[in-house]
Image (cartoon, rainbow, N blue to C red):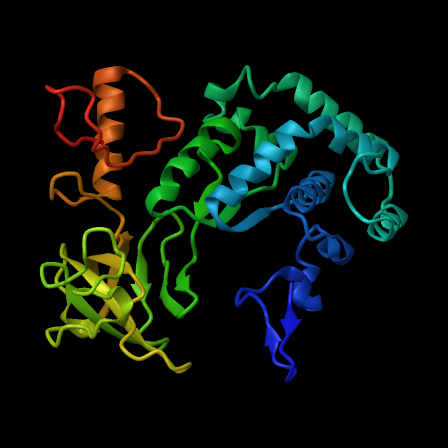
Length: 344
């Protein structure tokens, strides 16, 4: 939601939403009045409601795949209320929105008994909890049954979001619906474009910003990414040994430094990328990790990517378990006199 300074300058999120542009809004199932809801659970419910109402839905979009995962969790949790609203045209009585917004939404909503009965049958034929493991098959995907024309989920699935994307496929969307991250961008600006619908790499966009790259063996990032007297993260002047966009070596990792038109000069915004090839003269990169996201119990500096790869392999090969989610932190407290080594 936007606000204004005393001098009239607009303050708010840099990213846009469908309701910011009336021409863009018509591409989405959720109507304009729903965006007056400022609480996330209620707005997510409305996104689910209007999406399920439209059997011709072809694409689901979110900045990150965790948003899509939360969408399906909401759909699963509130399935009965969503179907009831489609049947009657009335939102749940305990739905926490203003009377004004409720009146607008219910006034525009056309009950669809046929669609409601179709959804009831879909749920009976495909109970999510009983068929979670079979949803990787195209014919049994829960999402495909609700939306036969759904072809793409547009969301970022790189880095730590991969686990969430994996769970999304296993439980709800299967493997025949592409999860596509079209761009690599940040608040600072556009960084790269994904040219492969099934890929998770990006071709750097040389005209978007001016890029410099600091080889990681020269990056003076501290262990935890916090500021101290010797190392000040993005405020510290970058090394003079930076490389230009055409000088990257395939297989090596670099800290990105950007200069843009809005006033950031040689700004170290924290992303570390890995060069995996070239598209013409522009590097193709994958996101390796964020600076400071290391486990460092004994000076080993284990990145999130390395830890997740090791944990996944151990869970599969040694424990015979599937990882649903995980969290880890360095542990320094002594259990007893013999157990004093730091661990995770």
